Image 1 (cartoon, helix red, strand yellow):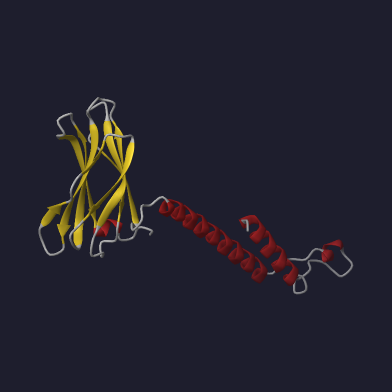
Image 2 (cartoon, rainbow, N blue to C red):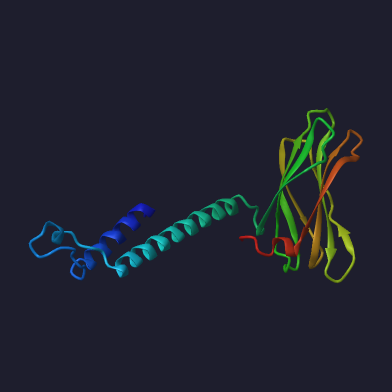
Length: 195
């Protein structure tokens, strides 16, 4: 239902309900007597109804946009971190659209789509995750690479973590990473994000 329909309907209802109780401005035979004056209660009710309808419309639009983003999420993920790109200073780039699981999960997952945006022959895209474990210590996931336009990737931890560093690089022809960029993802950063 559209917002204007809800507001218009509520306004018509409140005005119609307030007519018998409305005061007139003139004597019984004057032209002003035919014009009802809205009571303060009627005006307040209209404002409250319009405000509630507007808030509901904003919530519905927000829920629809979150649902659209979640529909694009790889299976088993909860939060869309967004794009992570290799460092500048080269005519090509590697880029990863990153999704992460909940930090309370026993096995933390970083997944998404890795894209090779480098036209140089032999250059490819590379993504790797370094996990900071809740019990102490760190560990690297095996890297994921692609020389195609795009490919899915999934990197997982060996236990509960407090932070993950997502590293996106280009690979040169000798398969050595260069032009790397690291995005640290922390539990407190995404604690209030929509799921």
